[in-house]
Image 1 (tube, helix red, strand yellow):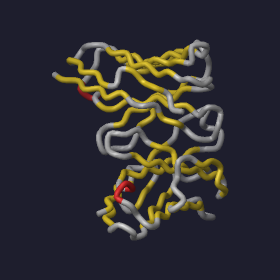
Image 2: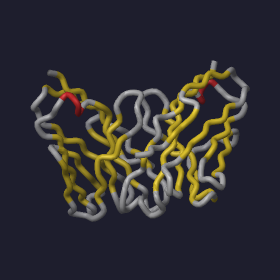
Image 3: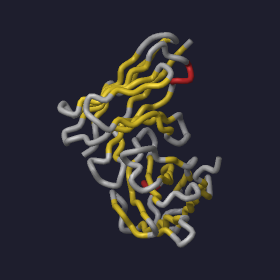
Length: 115
Length: 109
């Protein structure tokens, strides 16, 4: 079965550079979530999209932006990168309303290292 | 505010049991449980939707006490494959899943 696809899997950037992470949800899933997980930390919710519209926002820095495209894939854009942005970034997808009926399906994550 | 889990870490021998607790200062409408192995994605274990609900599969089960705003995850006869970090999560009736503080479980032979 198709899973959530994230790219790139690994990314190394310098401070103040820009990075873009991509997420391809499971087919027919209409909701995408982005999470940031630092070493030894729990995943922190960044932002979510339902049917290409932002549906909820968490602790996402102003330097970050995201969108969901017509084919339901999503991109997380991070600018003016800081050392503290180094983390594992997860994308998850689900069907709307599945917060109470099912699970979030997570991709394998994109590991960002900022030097 | 995120749910708080206890204990923070558990060390077990194969075959031993463990209980992981998840507590919230706000009303819980549902509780999710996930397991995450190091460097991998969180994997869904189960969701509890109603107070008093209990669920389980294999030797992992959970209960949800809505009034106490708590949930517990029970692992019986632990196996090496149970090692990982366990997270509870809740949506606080929104469209986002907020993870708990996590419990690291290590099972040794």
